[in-house]
Image (tube, rainbow, N blue to C red; front, side, top):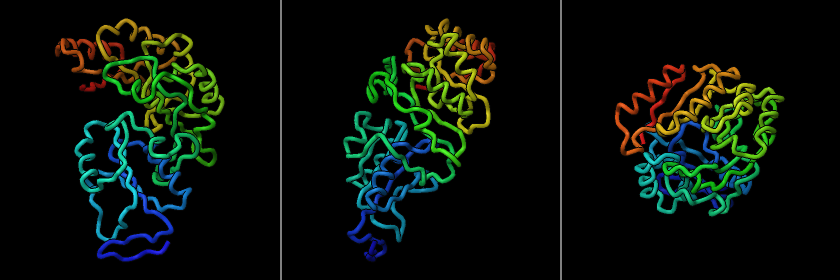
Length: 298
């Protein structure tokens, strides 16, 4: 593309657009931005991704192109100050993600939510990322998934998620309700037969585990986000779920998962009647079981 100098910045010629992607939060690669990157590169546009933080301000630096289009994605509500900075700097920016308008989708801005994703903006990331299902069976008041994704349904196979050789057989699943989908047994078979290591990134609902599903988890190479340590994530959102939760945890251990492999996110502060003693009671019971409690303030 022809470049034209405009003051202290560079503007691309008319033959292509300059597209700026702003990754506002989260350690993992941003799947929505990866789909946007593929969409624009397939059209011949120039795409730049910036991970925003203390080391990288939102304001453009001297000599950088003036973007023709800006997309920003925020996962967490605590990123609202960054979102406001994006709006001030780029008033026409397209902003999405669960940290902002949960009803806005990629389709709303003309981007497909299926097909190829572009990993090139995350060169140090070697795993493969995706969903085998979307939605959830539950409608918890503190969760945006039912509003954003709706009822539980199947999405992709492991073969469709994996990038293929020479990439490692490491799969990061973003599923919110892995065992809620009809074909979860097929996905477990794929993971097992392919020798994949898998990170159930959003956790497993231990309250719904049966001996069959607990055995399925134990049969695969479950890992933490770095694919180094054996790790399963689940949650304990309120004291009323104690009996169901521990039945699920006991099923996992019965089928070979070590208690110290299990991290349990403790939602605290959502129930207005909850006391510090209540929270400490839940924490103590998990410690006695051998699992690791991880408090999550509401």
